[in-house]
Image (tube, rainbow, N blue to C red; front, side, top):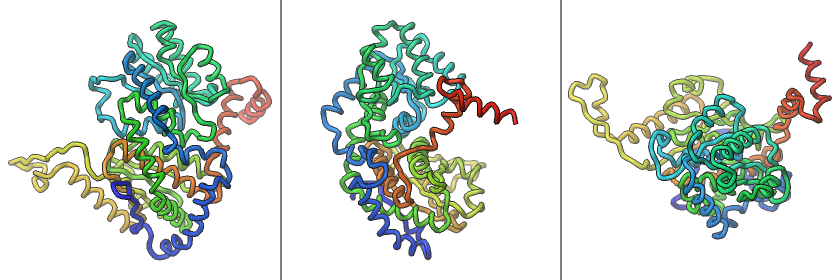
Length: 442
């Protein structure tokens, strides 16, 4: 596919790993067939598979209209959600934003994120920030009862109604939730909030191309049509590179590489890596199997994690997100005294130096026994981010089936919740609460 992200696997696959990859191609094609036919475990959560091409003009126009409403009346919009209900939107917004947007005036509202933690000072500071300013809320939850977003929504709903009045709050609170049931659906109906649906067959970590992600991204002022168009391109023509990635990472895993480090040399891609970690960690980490997803921001982390990657235990491989063009050019000036010894790169643009750092790092790590997969991205914009999102999603589904797990459930996530509810004396958890208290006394 021309004008697209690409996968380069030749620096990761050599010798026995290349042989392993060749042997895995039949398994990958079988996993792809399982995914596309809907015959595997978790097949009731495959709504994302053809989601990009199913998004129509009516849906996009409605989301843009809601975003315009929030942008017209609000200085801040607080997107409340956790996990997949916030990471995708956060990743795209951060990737497309001015690095210092928080310190600059803008023509639209600043999008803030709450409900992804239970940090009291974090919530206090956000409440202090929006106090006295008009703000809106996008609350994202299928059930409306998840603890972290539930606390945040209760706080900010109460604050908004007291500060701006019930009528303003009704206009500027939008619920993204289940189509028919759940506490948030009931509240939205009762209060008259505008609503969007989280499809029943799309899990949170695959939901960035639903209103879960598209609405906050549109509020931030970015082109959701180009984002969706990029995903459609990958849905239609991306199978070759999707298979290459899924095969390579599983071949490396079977040859003892248990950790995948997603590395980037572009600071704005930090939260793309955070979204990727949830996507792969929650999809593959089951039955005591799975590649552990980690991430680094280079060159920064070369001065902290670089030593471990270069000379530590050889159980890891790198997947490098390599970006082609930058938005701007900054030329390094000459200096007559040259006390810092940098005149040898005077006249070069900063990105040239960064790309040489990227190449030098990849060569060093490969020499140190770290296989390198490379995902090239022509530019960081909505189109290529849409491609990247769908690429990672489909490769994740295929890779999970190759591992022999259900990529679309997350049974282990509920364990901490049961303990937390018991410790908080939530009704219905009395027996577990007693067991925990007895355990803590030992």
